[in-house]
Amino acid sequence: YLQHPDTFSGGGGLTGTTGEYFWGGAASTAFWIDPAEDLFVVFMTQLLPSSFYPLRSELRVATYQALVD
Image (cartoon, rainbow, N blue to C red):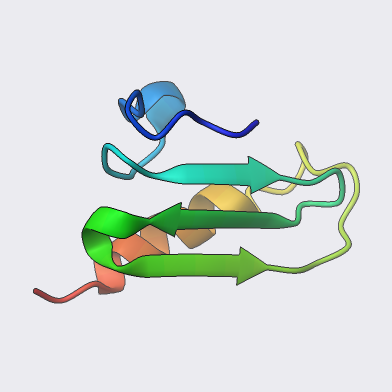
């Protein structure tokens, strides 16, 4: 779903910051934009069912771990 930029709270175990918005597709595709980190990610794949493969959550964790101030 598209999260309202003022309400992101890291719910559901997701990493991120307030102001972030994102969308996930049926075949594990995803994008997110995090203005606070000056970051955008577009992830294209074709894996079904998307809930079986933890790629999106692993990508988020790896992305935020790789950020350097």
